[in-house]
Image 1 (spheres, rainbow, N blue to C red):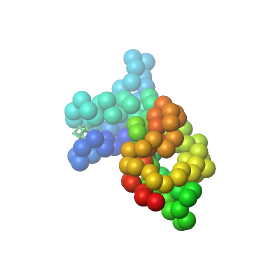
Image 2 (cartoon, helix red, strand yellow; image 1 turned 45 degrees about the vertical axis):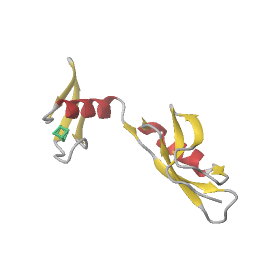
Image 3 (cartoon, protein in one colour; image 1 turned 180 degrees about the horizontal axis):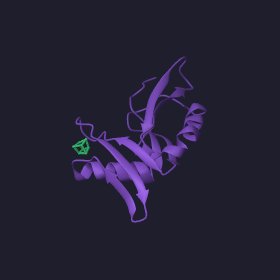
Image 4 (cartoon, rainbow, N blue to C red; image 1 turned 90 degrees about the vertical axis):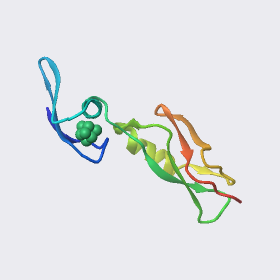
Length: 116
Ligand code: SF4
């Protein structure tokens, strides 16, 4: 299967094409090794950093922004969003605090501080 991929590693945004051939994955259009690695990862195991918000249980109408500490497989994003949606945490929350531990190979961490 041929896949068009735009490199997002630098502002140049090289348009690339990746296709599996008999001799392995063929990538064209990249202009540096970082693009080749990005296209290879996108084709074989695409991952994303997920950002969202978690409800603060002990403060009305308050959320804390969160993100994955490292990228997770793209196929797990929907399930992770459901889990995050059903999660609550009590304030105070400190930036960098682990909100959900060890899920899809990473942690969900707070990206801001919320005081009581
Ligand atoms: S292939 Fe290299 S030069 Fe092109 S966008 Fe990616 S990082 Fe930038």
